[in-house]
Image (cartoon, rainbow, N blue to C red; front, side):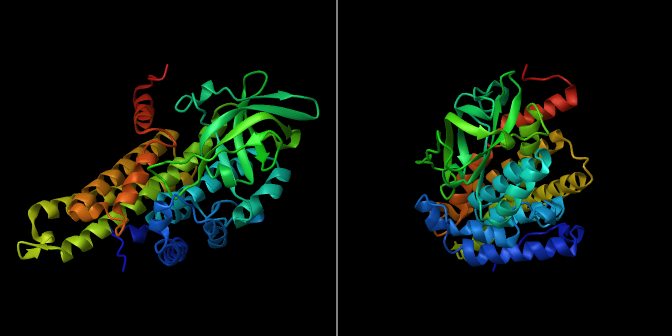
Length: 388
């Protein structure tokens, strides 16, 4: 049975509501995700039935007000949900993170009341799947260079361009995409499945996030109704605020992957015998385990603090970047060390470690690369931008 590490009694910092929602998601992961996720990753398939179940759990937009189908919970609740989902697999957390932070959040924050009422309840329930389009083939860390454009054609907008590395695009009913208007200003548009000129090629042959559906958005004179423009934001601050929310969720989520690797390695070290005693008795193995637990504990405290700051609307983008960068690196290091404790068995599909390790190679790159987040911190402390 899974025994989550809590060396500094971080649970005492959580409310009863936080613990109740965490318990519900933890039980669902153990019951529904764990038994099938390794095979799903091997088969390069996303279990589509998870979408509806995640909606029933309240994992989509948990901080969105109940009026729009959300659970009306706080940012720490969102964090603990992401932790449990990523303990199952980064692909499952990605699906919930994209739906919540990159689709529901911008519609709620930047949309009008009509857009909120039309889209948010169906996204919250899992009836509709959402996707987010910002990254382009030639523009990733530099989104301001995007080539996607839309023109005002009187009674509609005409959208052209392409986006890639999009979670859920091949199955999405709704997409929030970012493109430049005729004046070169970045704006958000809501696109819908079946729009003429919209194609969604799937990205296959991934070594990472194999249980996640990844694809593209290709816009060839796509007619977008004018009422689908997000009216309340202009410029890159729109998508960057979305990314702040997603990065925050990742900072929590990867702790779950790290915990799963640590728990697996600890159990294995106590059971595996060499030289007539458990390998947990050897100094080097104890060093690995002690360092893992230390880093998990630091990450827990960092994520919790950023969550409380977000609850007060005081968390800065740079603070969120630091938490995302630190915690993903922590999780990837723990996955690698855990794999070594298991030796050759660490690469086996009988254990989750190699799957987590491969997934985290994507997580350390998306929503801002590891190096870009370092430069965001550098800019914040020196006032000098390394991007210009």
